[in-house]
Length: 384
Image (tube, rainbow, N blue to C red; front, side, top):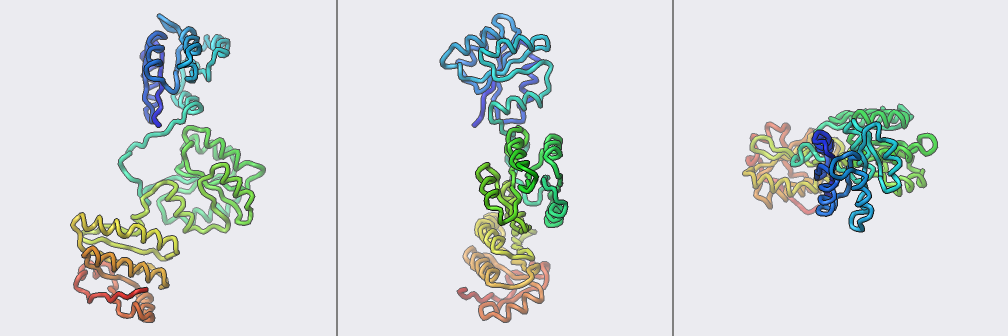
């Protein structure tokens, strides 16, 4: 939902500052130079918030506020008064008419946004809204945990990613960090003293800079009551200890709405490359399989007719991997794509031990496979 904010002020400079402050948020800014214009604009546009100056010609802010609150169609609109330092007491006196908040001039843009964010649900605009974020893009992850070993485990487990993992041990440090550099995702340990984790979650959600930041709860697997509390409060995901780092990485990427397909699929020259990682857990295999058909079809649409299926990083062969390879080869045939397989010596040896994979032909390197796609013997497929 796009909110409408009406700024009523005889100072053009103030109206420009207001417009600039809301520039990064999904808002429409309406302007009026006095109370008469403001009332007309409010009646016409029904704004979600009115920023109202106290001292103006023609009709001042107090009179306009009084008329707003006496009009059934307008009285529900929240109003924030703007006043000079000397008018602070006057604003407090008229607050009983119905002022949601007030701001003393001159004011900082971030203070205006913070106060407005308490009234309307401000949503930040992306600087590049048409670009899909990739799994390879940098991001900042804040871990709030008073056990350094856990923070180190997460840092080590995610060091292969472009994500920066920052650990803090106290609520105050977390709030300061978010104020300086709002993170892309926050992981909060529920084992922090008292109800620190839940208090911090509420503070994060009331701050306009972190209102939409994904927040995960980190908890011992057996602490089911805490898990239920976290889910009820609105934590985005529950991460249980001991931590499955592969699962954590996947949940982080999904929460940040990253394009995960680039983990497994890339166009290199005239070939589509499908890569499987070292650890092929059921979740990873399912994810790679979900992306397969649309990625292969997109390659065909782009004029590519070759696929190299690269499993040289895979540590051991199991039925899940075999099923995915059958799916990849069958999808390639359905789309008239030529394909070749790449594997390490161990996987090649293991394939000879399975009846259904014994006849498969592999190349030792990606370069060799690229050069020989379509020249290799036809792979024999069987039902798995």
